[in-house]
Image 1 (cartoon, rainbow, N blue to C red):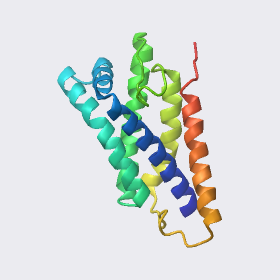
Image 2: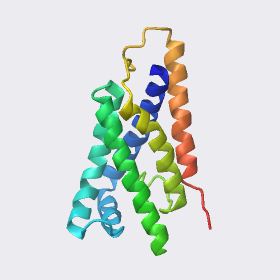
Image 3: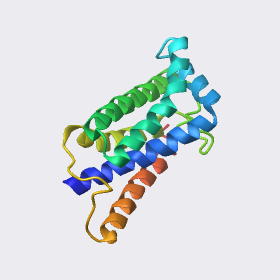
Length: 170
């Protein structure tokens, strides 16, 4: 179970680190899009859009080093549920809004791809939040092959999430 939780934790870490850094590069767009969804009042939406990249990076780093992983899993779950709600709202209102989930690296729109991606990540985040992980990436004392296997699994799950971003359901 510890290895599975570590794989989930690292998958979330890779995703949030990649997402947070790419949003910081184009913070203005992150702020504009977050406030454009219309769930939060404009001023709080702008604030949330400016803080979100930093929050994603902090979550990623905490998960990587194994600091408060249960809390990070719960915070990640809440964040991902908010992303799912935002994507459903955009679909319901028929808006065509750029996602900016990974800054300017991918040009995808909010919608079903975002819901699928967030749901996949939520499946990873919930166990990390609910179960105690007794191992971190730094505590692995077996062969480096184990670490390589875990990292490859984490990257594979990350890529599944990225690929889901491009799903279009009409």
